Length: 166
Image (cartoon, rainbow, N blue to C red; front, side, top):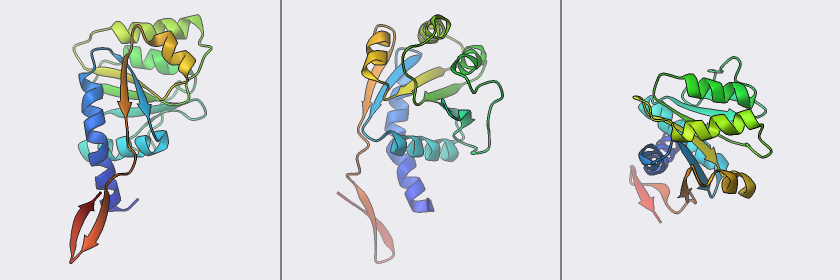
């Protein structure tokens, strides 16, 4: 991703990120039009701002969106990642991709606890476009947001300047 594309992606995710931080619950369900594009936008935002933003995927485990090589030990499995999130004493936004039912009773309890826990530091667990069954299961404790990140604006070079079209 070149510098201009990275900057445009970071700007596109800024509004959604602010809405996530302002959510009334520690658990956010974010329905995205394009999930992979959203991850790239949040990665660009994390790199630009230096925010503590993480991504958990079942095949990969938990990693930092700011640092592509930053992986967390003992966070490959969902239970380990949820315990890490619950025990963290620092600001953090944890995106989760590929989470599906059935959840173990322990994992479901920790997710619900993360939704209700108020801490001195801001912590958000964000489920990216989860399946409908999981959304319905957590609707009573989660804040639900929609993020339409379809490309409607394009950057174009004209006379040595970048112009926004769309």
